[in-house]
Image (cartoon, rainbow, N blue to C red):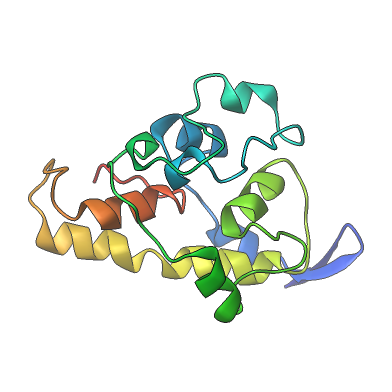
Length: 152
């Protein structure tokens, strides 16, 4: 069913499927993007998000929860058409702004991208023993960076 949200016509059913397991604050505390996603440009976001966050001006793999680099480069994201002008840093920037109440037409695209990432949850469940956090560490880090609980 289509609904007008902040002057934008959106399929409201898409919002029903978006149930991230981690908040931006929790993701930052656990360690994502080598701490450098925002490059310390964080004034736009609630201060409380950064109280116990692992952040840095430069990428530091040791700030990632699983101590591994995971994901494609920003250049590759641009090449694949995954960066939108509204959120030039990518999906996590979109998620942060969404969690603060912003609604845009690209919400549907970003939520579908998030939902499709669930395939990595299935891969870990299929290939790893329960509680073996050393199994598929890159995939677990990627899950964390998409607001999925990597401790499955």
